[in-house]
Length: 594
Image (tube, rainbow, N blue to C red; front, side):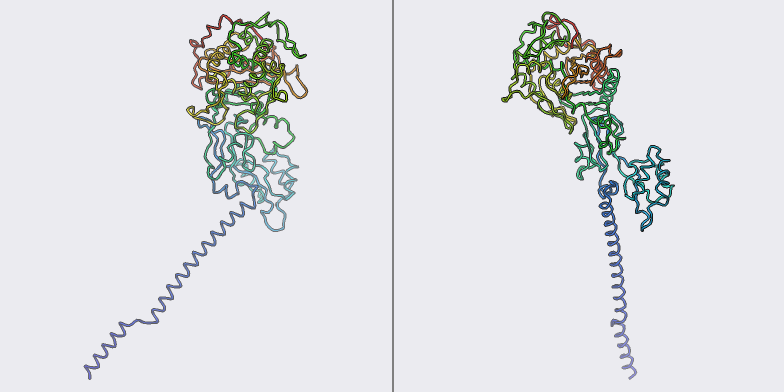
C-alpha cells in the first residue's frame, strides 16, 4: 500500500506541474491586450493632434490672405526666385523682413482692441516712425479693421513696438522683394505688389516662372550687364542734366543676337521705396517715372532714319554711283508742303554729303526715286509698323502711315518719311534697325533674356551684306567729319547719325520743343554693339554750346558711354585700326547740319 500510494502521489504531482493554470493565463492575456489598447490610443491621439495642427495652419492661410507670410504656400514653398544679370549678379531677390500688422482681435472677447487709446498708440508709433501721420494712424487704429500699418520695419523698430505692450500690434516675418542695386534697371525689372505678383517689367514677364509651385525659387537670367547698365544710366543722367532735358532714354544692344545689355529711362524710380498705392494715387511725378520711354514712348525721331533711306536706295539699285549730285540750294514744294534744310549747304550734294550735312532736301529726292512701295516695305521689314519686339508688357504702338484705301503711300508721305518725319517709333525700334544696318543686313527681335550666341534667332534679311558694308563706311564718315563728331570716342571706331525733330503731339508740332537722338554702333570695322541716346526736350545753354540739336546734346552722351563700356565688353581702344573708307574719301566734304 505504501508503495502504491507513493506512486500515485508522484503521478499527481507530475500532472499538476505539466498542466496549464487557467487563472495565470487569463491575467497575462488581459495585460497584453490592455498594453496594446493603450499604445493604439497614444497613436490615435498623436494623429488627431497632427490633424488639428494642419487644420489650424490651413485656417490661418485661408482666413488671412492679406498676409502673404501667413499662407500655407509661404511656409511650405521656396521664396520667389531671383532675377540675375548675365554675369550672375542679383538684381532682384527675396529676403525675410518684419512688417507691422494691426490685429484688433489679439486680446479676444468683446473688449477694446488696444490697451491704450488709439491716439496714444498712434503718437507712440509716430515717435518710432516720424514720417507717419498721427491723425491717419489714429483713424486706422480706431476703425478696428485689421491690416498693415507698415510693410517693412527694422528689427530694432520691432523691439520698440514690442515695448509698447500692445498685443494688437504684431510684427510677422514675411518674405519681401528686394532690389540690391536700388534704381538700377528699374524699368526693366518692374516691382512686386503686396500680393506677391510681378508688375510692369520682367517681374511681370517672369511672374509665373518665379512663383509657380514647380519652378519657384529658380532664378531667371537677363541679358543685361549691370556694369554696362550703370554706365549708361550715369552718362544719360549727366547728359540730361547738362541739356536741362525733361527726360531721356538709352539702349545698348548686341547687333548679332538682339540681346539688350542695357536699357534706361529717365527719370527713374526706386522699386524698394515704391508702394503699391503710389501707382494708383494722384501723384503724376511717380506715375510718369514708372513710364518706360525706351519701349513705350513713341517719338518722331527725324534724321537718325536718313541712313535707312540711303541703305534702301543702295539695296534697290536706285543709288549706284555715290558721286551723283542732287540739287540742294532751294526748298522743295510738294503738294503745298515745303521741304527745306537747316541751312544752305551749297548748290548740290551727293548722298554721302547729304548724310554728313543731314540734308532733308536731298533725302526727300532719294526717297522719291526709291518710291512709296519700296520705302514702305523697308520700314515694315524693320518692324516699324508694329509694337517693338521685346518681352516687356509696356510697348508703344508706332504711328505708321496707312496710306490710301489700298495701303498706297502718297508722294509727300514717302518723301517726308525718307528723312524721318510723318511717323513715330520707339527708341527700341531704332536700336533694332541700326543693328540690322551694320550686322550684315539681318533684322532680329530685341530680347531681355540671355541667349547663346550660337542659337541666336535667324531673323529676316532686310538688306544685302554688301549694302550693310557700305553703310558702315557712311556712318563712320558722319562721326569723323559730320554732325556726330562729339561721339567720336578715340580708338573705338564709332559710326552713327544724329537726329533732331520737333516734338509732335495731337496739337501738332512744337517748334520750341525738340527730341534729340544719336544712334551709333561700334567698332565699325567689326560692329558689335549699338548705342542709342535720346533726350526729350533739351535746352540750349552754356553746357551745350547754346545748341539744342543732337550733335551737341545726345552725341556727347554716346561719346562718353562707349569708352566706359567698351573695355567691360572686351573691346579695347585701338588707334591703329579703323574701317577702310579710302574709296569714298574723295566724295566726302566736312560740314554741319541736322
